[in-house]
Image (cartoon, rainbow, N blue to C red; front, side, top):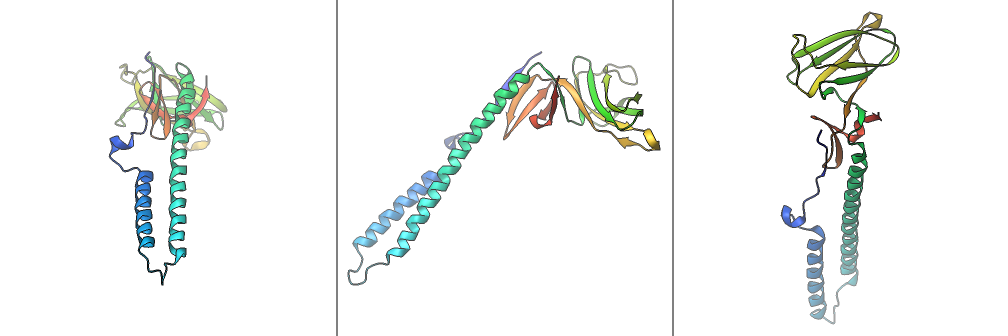
Amino acid sequence: MSQSVSSTTTSSTAASGTTDPLSSLTGNFNTFLTLLTTQLQNQDPTSPMDSSTFTTELVQFAGVEQQIGTNSNLTQLISLAQGGAVMQSAQLLGKQVDVTSPQMVLQNGSGTVDYTAQAAGPVTIAVANAQGAPLYQATVNATQGSNSWTWNGQSVSGATMPDGAYTVTVTGNAGGGATALPFTVRGTVTGVQQSGSSVQLELGPLSVGVSSLTSVQ
């Protein structure tokens, strides 16, 4: 089973074609100083310029420059933290995990759902394909609390479904009314990938955010 770890980094300023705000501000600041110096050199000695105006502008320029520098440092820290999260998550490669997802992952012809029943009684588990067409349905007698159910990939017609991600619903029938039950799906981590600002766990064809992880087997 192939395993992968990858990280999508932010493209450089030159590659993206965008202007570096700090460089732009520096250029404007230098232009401002040039104009200010010229004004001072050519001011009327009998009516000198009010220093409070350009002093205020100097302070504003310095404040904006500091803010841009702070944002740049924060961006670097976030990038380092994301890289660390990818490396930490890489330790899950090859391990079985439970994640919150509306899709069951069928790996090597087997998929498992862990669900919680408020009371003992019949529970209906339905599996559908990506288009929503029903493939399999089972009614089991659940015990109160934690339960597990495993699908062998067989459809109601007896056909064997290929490994993939399938929509699953778990419905409790105790008490005379149908109620959706909370559940997680189990699978083996085959890859870890950074996507934007989040880290994704790959369970075969199923990709979920690392925040969906509920337990490691």
